[in-house]
Amino acid sequence: VTASLSNDLSGATEIKNHILDLNHTYHFERIVIGMEATSLYSFHPAMFFHEDRQLKELHVEIMVEQPNKIKKYRDAFEENKNDTID
Image (cartoon, rainbow, N blue to C red; front, top):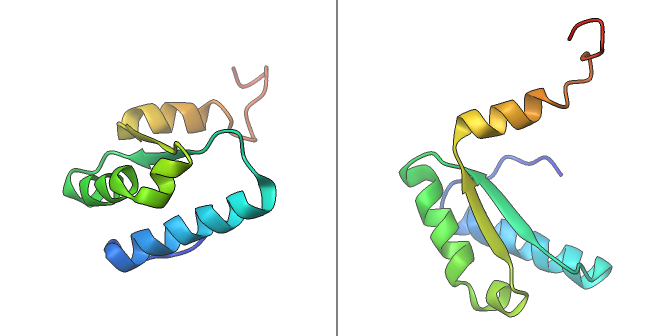
């Protein structure tokens, strides 16, 4: 799902509700919210997800990773990558 959301309580609540809706449909065994560490821009949403009662009941994990780690992971899956390029 691709969406543009505000970085505030409203946006975090939208994400939470989407997670709850998806879980209601698919009954996930494990839910992990992955976020890029961006100082205060990631701190408040991460704390919201961590402290939310409904997400706690589902044992949702919150992962905040450094941008360079995320880029390296993404680069490992580039579609134009092949043995010749390597």
